Image (cartoon, rainbow, N blue to C red; front, side, top):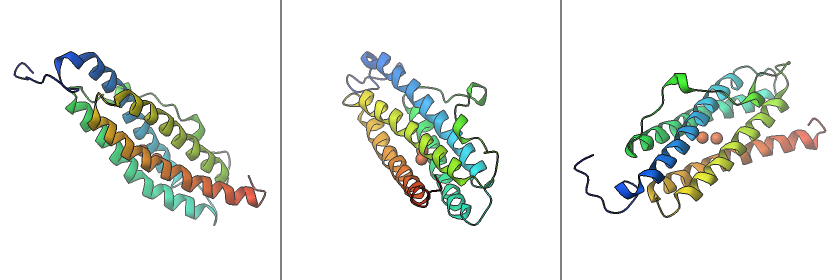
Length: 169
Ligand SMILES: [Fe+2]
Ligand SMILES: [Fe+2]
């Protein structure tokens, strides 16, 4: 670090505090993705029934995408001179994505996914605001990932609409 001569930008000495704030936000985003991977694995396997099939397949596909998000956040933490946290720092939050009492309760899973995606969308919007103008690289990455999450939520909102239309949700 002693050889760094940046005078502007997020890697400059003068932006140390801002950089640390962004690293903390990226750690939170990283854990959100990791937990989403766990929740999507369980919910791509547990649900039973003909109607569950589409949901399971869709979640199975999302797992790789959410894992990719976690990896991108980890890389960015390092680029900003942070350290990617170890597993002991993990704290679970997704109470709404725990297995339902009945594994045919697909609506529970759909609502849980919508809630997880909404949490990500809210938080990533905050990161976008916090990085606006001061860290264009993180800002750009977050915008791209936000786009993915908006797509995921829209897909599951569509699934929910079908159940609502049939009086099942
Ligand atoms: Fe994600
Ligand atoms: Fe997502």
